[in-house]
Image: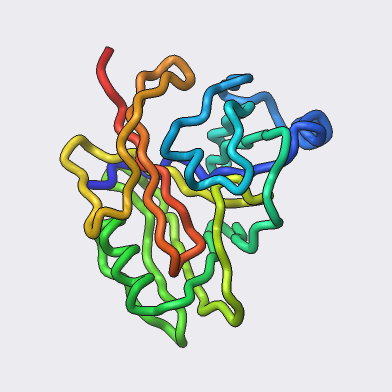
Length: 198
């Protein structure tokens, strides 16, 4: 079960960190030199040992991630509280989304529409995928908006084995178990987080 939507990532190079953060309020927390999980490395164009993380919970919750080297510009967009991505195979993408989110996906004018809202969320977090006119490969270190992160309960499972193995990491003082769900027919990679008791 999806407990709550946690954040979306925004990836940028470390050399742009100061200029990006200068226009933002104080982060809720930050971690510098945080190690990357093994499962995440396999989803990166430029695997890196670590990253800098700045979390902002106000407005649309966003985690700014900085690497020494980043991938191509992501075509994922965040507009008016809605995340927009792409798919290359409608049935495959629909099956992937339903398998991760555990909710039905509707089709509207060739677009796949669903919600990333958890049971504790007051706000809705819509996700809309449009059919891609060209091929693509999505990476977790693509520049710009990318990976939506969801808090899930211990019983949450993902159909069709699209998930990496869960790995433990302490972030912001919390012990987390994190895995990533991806599909070759969808440019959205999900981060699924279980908050563990210490």
